[in-house]
Image (cartoon, rainbow, N blue to C red; front, side):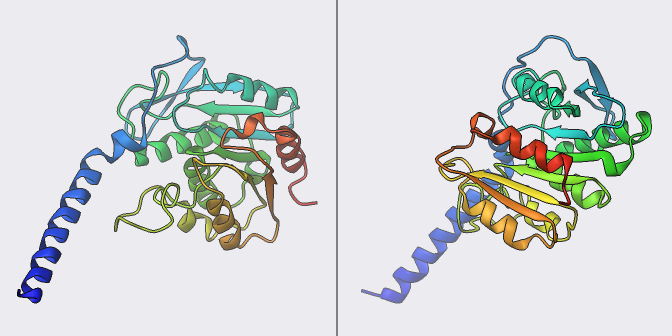
Length: 260
């Protein structure tokens, strides 16, 4: 038996299968990564124009003049209707809140992809800064799960923002589900964006999060250069952190006083 021939055949087959796997990832990654649900609401308060001509549905909940503003980027598999209670809770705590749907989510028509998530986040920031004339030092960036990608993007682009809150965040799209990099492409790479963020950062994570495992929070926290960073664990909590005890207390205390 020619073992070298067998090894060569095995390697060739493995390479072909891996190549086919990468092809499938490239072809179907958007459908897998962004499983947008049917809209849970029937009317949008407003639409924000994106740089590519598409629009993002958005909701604005104002508070008292001069209050901090939370620019909220939601998670996957949800839209503005499904996070309405979270937004109302933050607003009731004294913050103005702007939230938006990514392209393909809620009433934001189109097909979702990574770049359009960043475009929608940019459009939300632009509306606050240009239309509402809100200074960057009043705008707190908050991203939950998938929204951590949008919030990290904005934090890298706007270092003068008030602070960054990352809830159930992943270090990158691959590490969210797998501890090793199995594809040579970058997908939702939060780590590279956060490596230069020096604004105050709050990282919130559940110790029993099986959707985005806790290793993501540890990696994010370790690479952040910010001198004002905090990591808060919710013991026994899963991925749905808004249901965890004291979750809103932690968020609100930090946004009110990001540099104690």
